[in-house]
Length: 345
Image 1 (cartoon, rainbow, N blue to C red):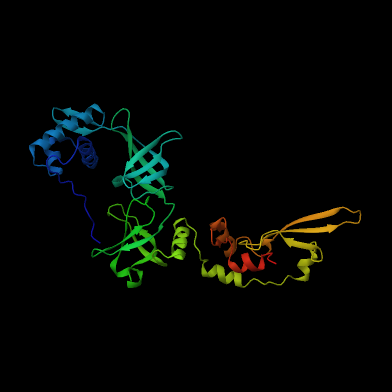
Image 2 (image 1 turned 120 degrees about the horizontal axis):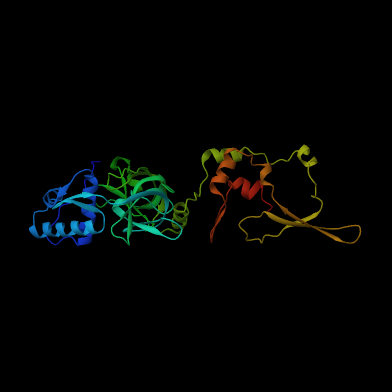
């Protein structure tokens, strides 16, 4: 994929003063140590119309008033904007740009073209600068930690290139898919794509399909798409499933001897018959003095899941079971959650 350069070519009346302000800021930042006049700036921006050149002069004078530029000699300007860098978290996004926290009370807006594909929850380094005394804007210098790198959507194959169009409308970019990586069976399906290249010099991040979720508009596909979009995989890794399948369902006499054996006590689950899991129970027994002993019980998962093992690490990664209208995505593999560790009647 060839590196795409942003075109700065202008036409008469094409840009407002605000847009020219942004363009001029980019020009002076790319020429930090240089002093430029309107002719040099116009050449960089490929401006030929005299009307736009006059507009450039006016905007540069506004930038002097704002403290962004300094007129070192008549008609010659250089960058003097006051800037600072902060490390923060992206708060929210839309199709125009992102918002990041400056502190507990203030946030900064960053235009999409200066966001380096950052999304909500990402940890970023932001350069802050002032266009005027009242307004602070910013530019993402680097993304320190991305909250997610997998996205659900459909593949746009209308042109000679392939792009993932994400279901999540807060994703501010399409993901480029190298043509050789796209198989016919990926098209017209809901797919999961993992981003493998975030090079901000390109117009789009680059990724590849890692899962075909299913047919578009199919109920099961849509449910699984929601799960994937929120970082919950309906499937467990093979190594986790294999480890779970090796766990013995038999409890040794040695283990029983370490515990209070209530198998002869009336014990019953309190979960209804249509529950998605059965892990809570009560026991009841009348004591010799006529009182009743009520026991409260829950499955001892720690007996089967060893600390630091692959199952334990997967459970830590998932953090919780996910309950949906028609299903539950357990924190532990099925053989544990709904069989060995289940109190189902």
